[in-house]
Image 1 (cartoon, helix red, strand yellow):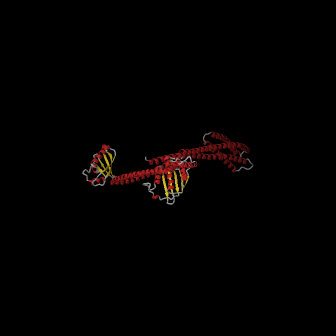
Image 2: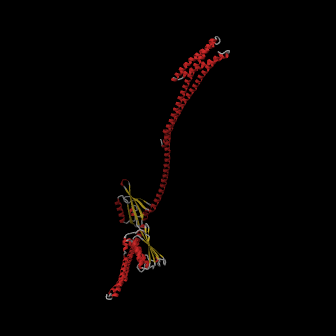
Image 3: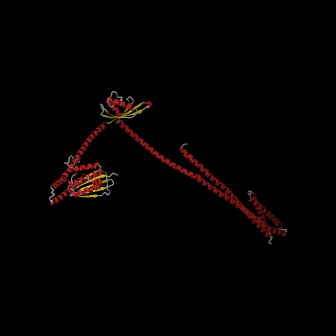
Length: 599
């Protein structure tokens, strides 16, 4: 049985059988109930007829009494009255017989026994009344006195008959009511059984069957969806397979057209070869064109080296570059890869794949030459930078020496002459010269402080670059005619490494000094700003400006100018910072120093 037969025939056939059995039980219960109820209803119709007959008996007894009483009246007895009495007696007797026969057909029960006892008394009464009636009929024409006696007896006897007949009728009605109640109980029981059966079938059959069918349908839908997905995947796989085959065909074509490959045995004999390899073999026309080593443009030493490499690898992949020389093939370098192929019974073959790397080697040689040239150029630049740094240091030393000689040295010489010219005997002149000496000493001390401040300000080490720059601008305001404004937008007192703070300070100092000395500025704004990633110092002046494009990138000596800007950039690059210069002739200069703040 296949899966389709199992799903359709087995599952639904089982459900059909279960449903047929359940519906059969319901139908059987309904039919049995209807048969019993219809039979009982038919018996009840017959019981109603019997009750009617019993009531008719009472009516006939009264009719007979009336007829007999009419006979006893002064009116003359007619033939019709006699016939009417005979018919009533006959009908009364037949109805009594019918009641008796019906009583005999009833099933045995306590109720039937009660009915039999009551009917027995009724039977006695009716038999007596029939006998009296016959006697009345026999004596009504012959003996009036006798007839009146029997009429009186009939009238007295009739109420007893009617009472007992009523008792019988009531008993029979109770019997019929009991049967009706029994039918009702049976009907209620049948209805309860039918309801319970339907309820049981709903919970035990229909509901599980519905759930099963629902589950089956869900599984079918899921299977359908899975089948559709599998079909889509299969279609995708087929499509990918076709695409892969096409790519493999293109790759195979490309390999045949661009790669040199061959399959050889352990002795180097060519078993099969690609199109490009075969072209080389045919073009070179080697005497041993079936031996691979003789057809790769290798010299004797290279052939021996390749053989030894193959034998020493023992089944591993080999890759090596060789400088080759062909007679008729323009290839200078080859990358040779050898892949072992294990055959049955320990036989090993090799796949040799060769790549023409002549262009790559030439390009590599050019790159090596360019790299050597670059290294030489960078070395020359470094030497030039070192030379410029040395020159700048010498210039700085000369400037310091000149400042000391021109200012402090002259003041010391003047102090020496003034001290030598002191004459304690001349009181007034002596006191004036002492005052002059004090003023000169004060100026010397101020000059020494200024020189030492320019060399290494103590605020830089103690309080940081922000405080040091602020102190520098305040000092320069005192010593120069240029108005210098310091604008600090940094709330925190930032501290960095000593090297960083020193370079930031020196670059800022150099920018301010350039604005004072060369730009002839009368106004300089030094502004500091900070973001989460950057510290920015800008120096803006209203000097004469210049054209930055005319400045040499690397000045050869101090005569060309640009040494200050060169060392500013060198200092900032040394601490991973940058310097931006924006200047226009007659429009001032703006220098921006940016230093990235490490998180």
